[in-house]
Image (cartoon, rainbow, N blue to C red; front, side):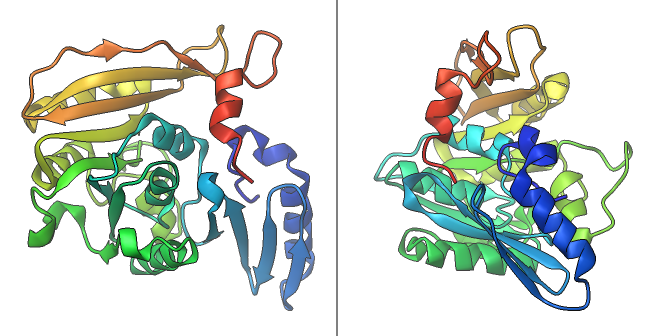
Length: 284
């Protein structure tokens, strides 16, 4: 099944189900399918490629080889901020979604570093597709060993890190997906260490994480001289416990933690909440 931008729609998305059906029946020949609901799907051999419309009028290309745009990244990009004279760094940039979404809403510049070479190439292509190559670059590399020109250069860092330890649960068979979903190339402590190295004094780190492991995140932040500044929990509705935490931290700055009002995906009637619709209004 192909992932949709809104994760809860994956199993019911007509376009995805049609594309999946055609993929099963046409493994030996190329098939092109144009779907009206969630973008354009193109089956190239066994790879299903999708164009996704983002806020700011941008479109990106994603395919089955790499971790795709998710609801977590969309909500994180809305939570983050960069001003016109600031420069940001996407740690573990994947196919470039976060940097493009942040630049699509704000006026700053966002570079990215990605360990998977093919994903980094697609991210570079996506920056070019969105006419953002002049505002940011994608570097193929490991954020645990930042290039010298990325050290203490950035006003903000952003990351949607892997949530799962390789000691728990199944690891995806495809290496690029395993890297994105499981902390095989850097755990949360190493990510925070990389952010602390990349940020200027007072710089901001934005990331999303699973609420049940916030204690691990806060310890990693503290150990790397990063202080949590803002926390917002995301709930499906008022009756469900939080499924996602959005966090902002500051480098070398003592600050009080501002616990923001929760973000509810659904309203009391079961439809999408007004704020959730606002965040997604320019997508697809």
